[in-house]
Image 1 (tube, rainbow, N blue to C red):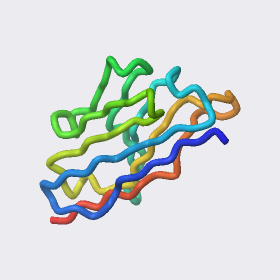
Image 2 (cartoon, one colour):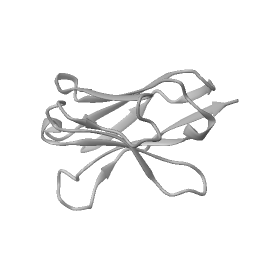
Image 3 (cartoon, rainbow, N blue to C red):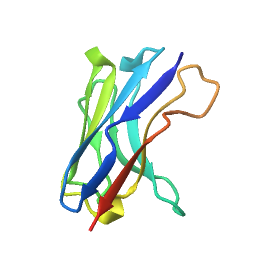
Image 4 (cartoon, rainbow, N blue to C red):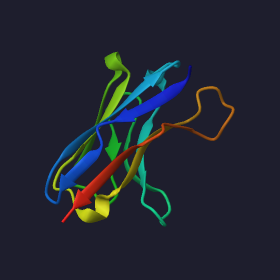
Length: 119
């Protein structure tokens, strides 16, 4: 089955850290760029990190630059998102996203993992 499965979310105090994982299966993961995106209740989706297929290029929006780090281990079909100095505004459901390997949909997205940051 072609899928992405996220894990690692949880409840953390402001200033704390979490590391999210996204494990891919059912397709040649190493061919795809991967995006971490988040969506908070009542808000639209926001991308927070992108990494290219080789793992050599990363990009971040200003809202998380310097606090979040994306990385990947292609041998493990896994992408990580290290989140440091978390803020309450980082509270959201986090998803990893790739192009659909089967070309049937605009994208392939996991079920997400919830991150809640308390003051």
